[in-house]
Image (cartoon, rainbow, N blue to C red; front, side, top):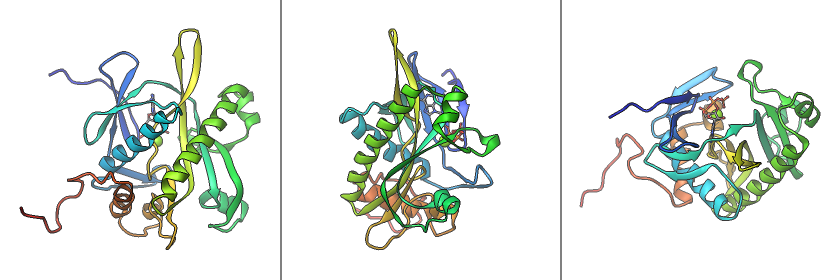
Length: 253
Ligand SMILES: Nc1ncnc2c1ncn2[C@@H]1O[C@H](COP(=O)(O)OP(=O)(O)OP(=O)(O)O)[C@@H](O)[C@H]1O
Ligand SMILES: [Mg+2]
């Protein structure tokens, strides 16, 4: 069997050439990093959970007409996606103050925001993904005004969809990050949601207890990341079998 060509290896995923032109295979690794790679660990089963959860969210978005790169899941760790030209911006939507916004602006974590706030960060690891304004984005040619309008509209639709889905299972969507990419269709180009949507890229708090069910569990050493992500998957009804090392008791039929 011919070896697949690897296109890119990032901190959490590997991209391989897909079976047809214009497609890629996205492989979800167990690697978990925080602080731009300063903290790094292998968390068994994380890739499987993120593959499943990203599939769930992206499929739902596709179904309500929010375009995403997701085509179909291939196996436990891999999914087929449309190849896009990634816009070098991370789009963050915040419903509740937390993380870097709380630190930067001195707003207490957990403060409900009067409306969703959108921020853009320039994707550049050497610069630690700095926050940028729309003026920077246009002046430096990362995206046009039309692109920015489209990114905001996509981000708000993702926010509405994800907030509702999470609320239904007792989880508050505090904030999340998406990436978008360009696809070309004839003479037209448009932006679609790419990369992943998972507990790695969201802040998720239990509505009753405030318990964190996202990557902050790892960033802040709050316990088992696998347990937190498994809880999210379980509540959403996509708890896959065989994600853990199987050290616990097993049912025998
Ligand atoms: N459909 C797509 N087509 C092309 N590239 C994509 C697509 N979806 C995601 N990507 C890119 O694939 C990479 C996924 O790898 P990963 O998330 O591990 O990267 P990373 O370590 O976070 O680094 P960075 O995002 O800074 O490149 C990212 O660079 C992401 O922008
Ligand atoms: Mg990434």
